[in-house]
Image (spheres, rainbow, N blue to C red):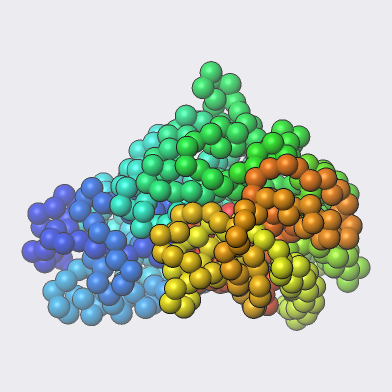
Length: 552
Ligand code: 5AD
Ligand code: SF4
């Protein structure tokens, strides 16, 4: 193996080849699924004696959980590896060995190429092999450079260790649960079907057991995640497949779970029972991330999206008919090969028509091995940048309007953690907006009605409302949307209120469970925030992270 021969004594006794007080630092890039996977890797390493550390310089094992969705995301990994090599060398000078692992979709896609490019890497492990980590580390401890990018037959989910109660508590009151992985859609721009493989849905019983365990440790909100989550078709209790709507009904019955979300959905799989679940389940939040990618039928066909603009708009209308206070976010790609100014104009028009509460937008990034990368008529980068700028301005305008409409409203807020200032807590509205409120720390994990008094670029501010939020939904609803029509008010829960559309101010770095939101990626998620060249957040961001990135 590359790195040294005689291992320092510290690694000699433990089966992983490491010993003493072992610490692991895991850094997630990309989507919420990577955040979930990082937690499960930490849970699986805990019984082998690894405690998590937020400080890479203290770690004996550093894992980068990577994203391959766009070139920029993949390149970030190599810059990070440059920094880690320096840490590793500094530790070696003190006689301490640091093991470096690359996990996630870059690991799957690039395999041993990673070690060629970054020889400080000891282990490359694809997303389907995380349950094997303890064994793989034993091999690394013996001096092998290990690469495992197989798609094994065994059920990884059931072999990964569950989180301890303490670990769950530390991760906050909102949690992700992967219910589906992989994708069979093969959009022509996307690497996911290659890196995550074919669609696989977990059985209902296993998901319910995981949610029960989370609820028992204090989790109040669960986001069911999958690359194509609404293609879910896991085995039900009697052996027949259940669709996502039915699974949501079952998860809603778990005591303690007050809020449900799911992401990321494909427009084509928004089937009637799932739409009906939004009408039937008060705990299902009225905010849906429904990526459209483009507003042009010509481009949608070239992307192999399997839906038209009209199909998409019809789905949005059916969702709004099911629940008047639905709000939507989306992903967009600008500069797909062959996209003309007219095609792009159709995307801008779609943004106006739907009135998104937020959205992520990206410049098309050719990915090796995908059909679109080979297409003629690649769009010059300057044109992509200019379109991205215009699109983000349109999205921002709608997001700001959505937020502005929240002022004076009373929204249900799930309190997650201390806020920016002493005495404040920050929570999330039904639309994933962060809301800062003066409230006692004992309210973390509670849902309370909050009257919104003010907005800033990234947050709402509010005060605990004297009465439950029920009942304002009608008002919200009717005002809000000029077009969306349907203002029927359903009778139910408090969470209803705020709903009108959401905005989502996406996450902020460092936030919570959702950090992931990210979607994929990058950076922020503040959705429409202009951050170039794309708008996604990065793991570790906030709660919202959730939204995003798991593709779609
Ligand atoms: N280039 C740019 N954006 C992409 N996405 C996926 N693949 C690419 C690509 N090759 C975006 C899509 C998807 C989101 C997760 O990332 O908008 O919904
Ligand atoms: Fe699948 Fe979404 Fe990628 Fe399309 S964009 S191939 S639906 S993961």
